[in-house]
Length: 109
Image (cartoon, rainbow, N blue to C red; front, side):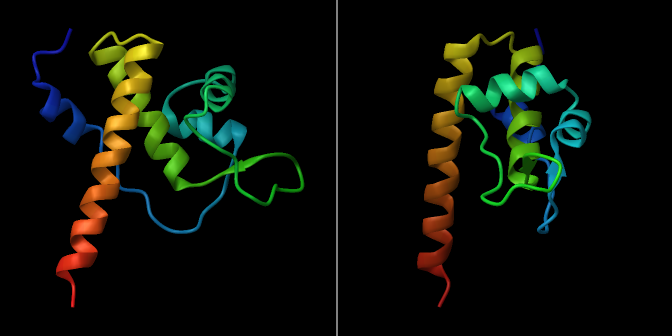
């Protein structure tokens, strides 16, 4: 178990990846520090979705998928979270991000 508080763990999981880059399954697995089987598992569980348009050689994923997978792997390892815990925390973090974006839009003239 980590000695960090939950908020410190969440903050440390915020990886900044921007742009419109698209990644293959293999590259996504490497970038997120996991393997292709885990990526497919998380996809089956609804955590990530492939891009709307597939690459010629198969599914592609965006930077958001990298961010989500890195966060999930960090939480799984650091907090020893099971699948139900990951689903709950992922849902809560997505809602927090949505509310932060909404607040930012409301404050921007």
